[in-house]
Amino acid sequence: MVDNQQTGRPEMVAPDASRAPAIELRGISKAFGPVQANKDISIRVMPGTIHGIIGENGAGKSTLMSILYGFYKADKGEIFVNGDKKNITDSQTAIAAGIGMVFQHFKLVQNFTVLENVILGAEDGALLRPSLAKARKELTALAKEYELNVNPDAVVEDLSVGHQQRVEILKALYRQAEILILDEPTGVLTPAEADHLFRILENLRREGKTIILITHKLREIMEITDTVSVMRRGQMTATVKTSETSPEQLAELMVGRKVLLRVDKTAANPGDTVLEVRGLRVRDEAGVERLKGIDLDIRAGEVLGIAGVAGNGQSELLQVLGGMRSGKGSIRVNGQELDLTGLKSDARSRRKRGIAHVPEDRQREGLIMDFHAWENVAFGYHDDPKYQRGLFMDNDALRQDTQAKMAKFDVRPPDCWLSAKSFSGGNQQKIVVAREIERNPDLLLIGQPTRGVDIGAIEFIHEQIIALRDQGKAILLVSVELDEIFALSDRIAVMFDGQIMGVRDPAQTNEKELGLMMAGITDTGPQGQEASRNG
Picture 1 (cartoon, rainbow, N blue to C red):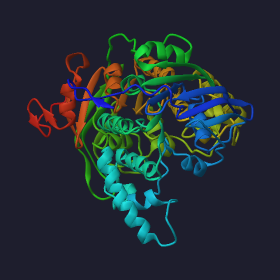
Picture 2 (spheres, one colour):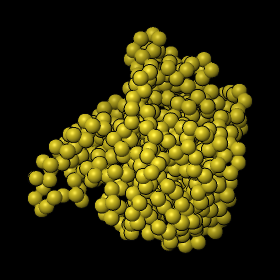
Picture 3 (tube, rainbow, N blue to C red):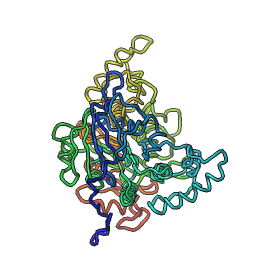
């Protein structure tokens, strides 16, 4: 790597074509029962490069990398690392070959410290003290070299998601990984955290590390990778130099058709006020005030987007509106007051008032991972008359309904008997979105609607949100993706430190202004002097 004299950004020095590929997969195939996850896949990843792998949810990207990391064993095919054939039977074999992997859902012990997580499974002997001392010294050096600063004595559960991801990268580097696989690394990061991750990856590449980046975000592919491979339905469809392609071409290769990379919508035609919130305050379990007198309105036929850095009260707002948390203040839906603290303040009572909720964390709040897809579709709506047969549930009717939803929302594989954990993250999201949108709610609360979702599914989910708006429904959208906020919102409210900093028309603002508001700065001064005048 060298630094560009004009921009100061690191530039890629062309890899030595005479060297063997860092990774070469030949003819890899893997089936799970009748589902062919990978079919005769071959790929070459050159050393010292960032190689992107993209594809729709269920395309087989994570399965392929799990084979490389030893989590799965291929039914057939060969793996070569730096030109040498390897029989990778488990993750320890992969680590010994210099391969590390950072999973989409982190593999950390939450009540251990950073230091304890890093050495877990890599101790030098029965006595931990020497291992801890050695690890602390190496962590300090690694953190300085790669901008992976994190307190080694911090307990993991107290860290932000971005810092937890740094711990996972440190774990791999501590085990001397020369090849690093990252599976959807920005799916749970804020834009600022994602930018920092890219700087880390550039530093790693500068030092000669090879990085395989699994993502569905075309902007990231274009920004950070040298080469990109495209998978569709378990097969490799193309490998191209990133500099010689475009987001539109990659999207078409992923989906097999032209994809609209913008939201096609008409101007909103707002009607009566559906949601009216006044003076809403929420305290967490520690007594810290998370919402500090929120006022907002949403009318029928409009999308109100909530922008802000994660952790500024957006989650608590969704939870109290959805009946998952108590609060103080006033919430009215279609003119009727909601109970915020009593027996009718739960999610079930909210659903009966015409409120549907797609939570931010699908795995913790939207699904029971060990239950079948058809059981997950019933959650919250199991008392629907169409699912009843006398005193019992009509499971056949529920399964037929689930299959219809899976077909409409293109859930892959379309098998209602599979457990939720058997689906990719994006297909899990489709199940939750289908369950809630198909209830025809008056008010839809939707948090991070396309987190971990591929480009084709993003297009579809966005279309469903706008279609619901055009049917005269009110929608509260929370997203850390500013592109998504701009694309879908008819009005944008910015949250900072539990307050509404202001409300803007998307056509009359920009990312710079919203970014300042997200940092607590408005044109009338810091800390929300506009908060009481939120439009």
